[in-house]
Length: 408
Image 1 (spheres, rainbow, N blue to C red):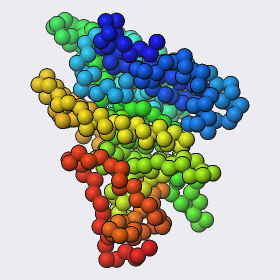
Image 2 (cartoon, helix red, strand yellow):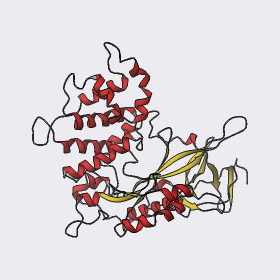
Image 3 (cartoon, helix red, strand yellow):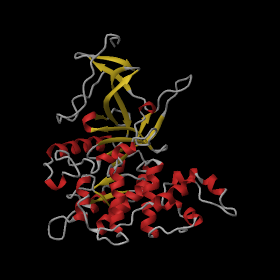
């Protein structure tokens, strides 16, 4: 049962917004299509792990997949706003909450507190002065805030266990946000229904550029540091949605690179005796000189990522114009646009975790001169301009060489 067909042959709201996903204890995920048969995929699971993961043979032999009911990656956010069924909203809310608490969706502290406050409202009811007590909130803090934020405040919480303890900074921010949760229901009552708070949580998550993404595992090169120019690699998550691609630092819980499809070209390669690579190419600068930047993402899932990018672009090109009812929540030509674009600048804070940190990446920089490639550093002989989005409104351009660059 793949969860994609409705009872009368037409998918209902839950089936349209969700689709089954097969996962394993190694956190490798495959989103199923309507034609997929979970039982058959389960039998093929060892072959899939060998092809798309770097797991040792012993782990592959012992791994057991399990079926999950997950948000459909191809379900546009604007259509999510049209859902009124409270149970479907609850399913979407629970998945989004799990991704926030697991830091799969990196959030600034202010946004974590706002989202945690809505979780408090759902689990604890309307805010009442003096409730919950600071000690009660502290014991359940990891139910409202991501674990890495709770850990940062543990030394502060330790000082609060004595007599007359008060809430620590993280707790106090959560309490303040909880106090501000609106209790105005749609029918004019004094207490809003849970569906109202589910929707408010999802609206807040819609501001995150990687909400609703499919996630893949990989590694990128670190910039060379120190006298010996040692670099190494860092683990990353690659989040792909209908809107674009985000590369997220798995340890630091912040975005390294965020690109819309109009801003990149891509390809994947499988060199012999080397790990497969997903290539992302985008505009940038090197010491003030406009250049093309190439980012290498090492992953056995490179082929899957490349195929998903291509499919998302095809969907965006083939999408029908939105109806009049969608005009308030998204552009007619963009089925995946944010429902509340006026809220997006709130996330562009100085040092925001959703802002790109290209300086933390090691990229290959070069310019194109029409015949060959003038390299900036280091040398590179291949361009991937042939694979990019061509919707007319894209901002991706080929960089022209400058007189000061040396011919490679």
